[in-house]
View (cartoon, rainbow, N blue to C red):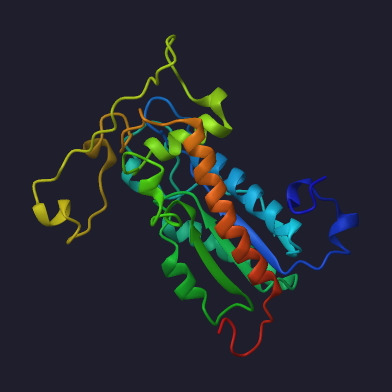
Length: 259
């Protein structure tokens, strides 16, 4: 039993525990180019959640990791078969029920560990602020190392590119599809520009129709990925995020929290 993972923990342990922080990972079920599994985001949520909670627990944090939610918002991938969509309002309602449950059990510090770019969760934090007896913190883990990612990866990653493929090669290589010569079955992950330069430059936002944006759902070139890069990336994530969990666990909730 790893006592920082709820799914592995028994009631005999839980009823005596004093959990201060709950971590809820959010994944998705969607295609990731031709080479990564549909469960990539969920596997990443499991992996990163387990590693940061293990490290934080080892440093004395009173933290518990919840099972990863395996479905997310996929409205822009609806044209890809078996991309399993949960509309934002449905996802928000589901998370709200879980937050209410945690708050009812006395856990006031809740971390949403998001693995899926389609899950836009900041509006939910605004909606729940002041309405539940808990404080929510959102971590989009794929954005945490934006300041150092270029030192690890050659190509920017949007979806199923070098970063996610490197994580797969490091931690679930048996699920990364490769040819007989060991090269990936993936395409180059090219993204098609729109006809509007303002959208291409990011001045104007749209919901990108993924079947028109990409060839096989991949957005970002995965072919420079290595297991070593994945291990380095996850190691740096753990270093940053475990430290935050320790600080959060130790923090006293009062009228000025989180200040």
